[in-house]
Structure formats: structure tokens, C-alpha cells
Length: 560
Image (cartoon, rainbow, N blue to C red; front, side, top):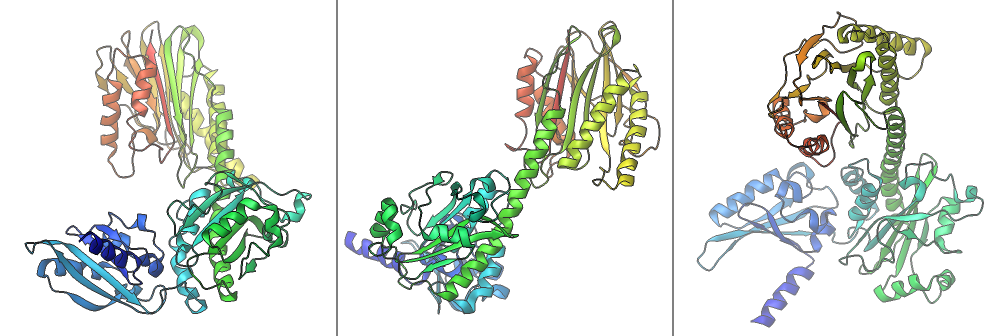
């Protein structure tokens, strides 16, 4: 029986037919390697997922039929795969069959999907449009350079090649300007790092490097020819005993022999006329050598991926610049002197919107008083960071006039309007559409706090016993509208009380109501015996994700 089981497993795993098993909840529990040749989806992206996520094309109809097979036990054959509009997404019509799997008592364990088609090998020239169309939805799903490179590798293995590597110049990974061509680098070979790799073998044992490591580029070699010319190199027959360039790269030659690499295609990763790196395609298990139609298909896939990589590079560069600008404009440390103990936290966003325009400040005023400020410029990127710096400077200048919080925000509103008008008249960057701000002044002599809001969330007040409240204050309009003057409200802060100023990124989440966020923050703030550092750590720890979708600013101040 043991030999029979092993033979059956070998039959299933090595079958040319695509076979996948789904449990009674329609979650994929097993799939053979052949399935990836039909739609390019790696095994790890299928297991545990429903048909709508684990299969290519429109599979809603297929999922319905799966449920019917589970319920009735009747086999279904001759279905088009994928069903509906996606029936010919990659190449040729595919025929699908569904069979219910039962236990010894006839109770359903799941359903088996078997797909057969006319083209089990890599797509050819006639399939190019469909393959490139499919790639568009799977490559470049984020603005992360390394992930985009990995998506390109995953998409092409095993559908097109058996082993693929994507190596990018160090400049691309860091978001800097890449080389125009290798020849412009004064004869130096640029530093390349492995950004993505995929193989039909688990763990990509063919690779000498793991993602993130520096890759050795031998000279002379086909790699340098690609770098210097910007053109692909096709070696239909790769023979380490006859290729002279491998004499200078014995480690690579050994890998070629060990894994039977017999055909090589190297494609430059070019976008907007600049070289970002190289994509290397190798065949080992597939006996067919690469040909001109393969080269054309690979170049089209790489060209589409290159645009996504360049967008990711530009995003990385702008985000780093905006972060550097923002960090240079925010205070390096905050100090409440003898009036208050003060702690601040700032977390930049890490999403498609990048860095925002949050700022905070602590300003010492006459008679031992202390001004606390948190603001948020609408928008993201370099423009928002620059506007933030201008508003922070304006607040500090107005604070020298020792104005009541409401009056200060009224004058700040007028200043902001003038700044936007000047930007429009000068034809400079598109000005920010607005900003919010909370400005509070604490007087240790009376233990009172004067507060004004300009469209900003209200501060939280924590009494010495740990009771947290969000006072009802005149909300005011955001800065830049020039609608009305701002009002000042007075709060009493008994000794040991804490006031928390924050930006909306702390309490607002895209998929939850703001009241949920305020309750979340309130629970973390009510820790009267903890130091402000511990409280700040607890509040930041309540954020739903590891990296916020919007900038998060928190300013805590406790009366001494």
C-alpha cells in the first residue's frame, strides 16, 4: 500500500493536467506544480484561499458549480476554464472537471478541480497579448521596488522560464538616479543587488545570492553587453564548456552544470530611457530553448515591469526627500521646563500617499507659561512638508506677540491665505488646500489651559486619577478658509493632570469610525501611575497596523 500511495502522489504531482483540491469551505488545500503553467500563480498564493483569489480570470461561476458538486456529489466535466469572460486569459481554451472527494462513509471531504488544455508549455508569440494583459494586474501592485521585482519573477516562473532573477542597481533600490547606460559610469561596473528571484525548485538553489545581496557582475560577460548596449542578449544554447566568459565566473558555471541550465535570456530593465537593472531568464526543466518570439515577449513583460519599478523608485526618492525636509523642520527635542513634563511622538505614513504635513511644537512664553501646538497640513509629499515648515515658523512668530490662542489662530489663518495667494501668483508648486491646528497655552500659576481649535480634533485631558475626557470646545474651521475668528476656551488642569494633543492619523482609520479610535486612545491614556514615555508608547501601540496609513503625531504634557 505504501508503494501505491507513493506512485499515486507522483502521478498527481507530475501530471501535465492542473490539479487542485478544495475543502468543504472552498479553501485550497493542495495543488500540483502544473497549475502554475496555466495561469502563472505560485502555489503559495493559492493555498488557504477561495477560488476567487486562487484562480485567474472570472471564477465566480466556477465557485458556484463547486458548491453544487459538494452538495450533490455529481461530477461536472467539459467546463471552460477560467469560466466567463476570462476563459482565454492566457492561451487556448481549457477544459475543467470537478469531482467530489468523499471519506469512507461517503461524506464529502472536498472537491477536486482538474484542468486540461492544449498548451502546457510557456506562452508563445500568439499568446503575447493575453500574457502581457495578465501581467498588468499582477506586477506593480505596490510602490515598493523589491516587491515589484519579486512580482515579475513570480509571474514568469514556471509559465515562461524555470529560473528568473531580477537585479537592480543600488541607486534604484535607494530611490536615486540610475545610470543612463553602463558606458556613462566611467568604465566602472555599477553595484547591483538581487531584488527578486523565483525558481521551479523550492528556495531557488540555483542562485548564488539571496534578495538584498550584492551581485557579482563578471567582465567580460553577456551581462556587461546588456548594460553597455541596452539590448537583450539571447543565448539559445548555454554551454559552460564553450562559453569563454564563464571561465572568469567558476561559481556561476558550476551552478549551470549542476542544475542543467541550457538556455539563457538577459533583458535590460529600461524605463524612460534609463537603465534600472537586468532581468535574467533561464530554462532547465523545459527542454525548449529560448527563441526570438520568447525574447519579444520577455522584453514586453520587462518593459511593463520597468515602468512600475521606476514609479516605485521615484516614490522612494520623493518620500525620502519629504522625510528629510520634515525631520529638519520638526523640533529635535521638546522641553516643558519647570511648567510641564512633555513627550512627543511622530510616525510618518508609509502608503501610496507618502509623508504628510503633520507638525508639533513646544514654545516657552513669558511668565513661565508654555504653548503646545499640533498641526496637520492637507496633502502629502514635499509640498505638504514645506507648507508645514512655513506654518510652524508663522506660529512661532505670532507666539512672540503673546496672543490668546483664538486670536493667534485668526492671524495664522490670514497668514496662510496670503502664503497660498503668493504661491499661486508666483506659479510655484500647487499650494495646500488647507490645514488644521490646535494651539494651547498652559499657565502653571493658575493651572489653567487656554485652547483654540482650527478644524482639529479636540485635546484629551487626563485627571490625576486617570479619568479621560475630550472636552467640548468650539471647533473652528480649518486654516485657509478665512471664514470667521477663532474662539478661546479655558480648561482647568489640577496638579498631575495630562493633556494630549494629536493629529487625526492617531484616531482615524479608513475602515473604522472616529469614535472607535478615540475610545482606543482613551483606554491607553488612562494610566495615571505611568511615566509619559510609557503612556506615549502605549498610545502608539494601539494603532491597528504596524505602519500607519496617515501621519501620526502625539504630544503629551503633564503639569508639574
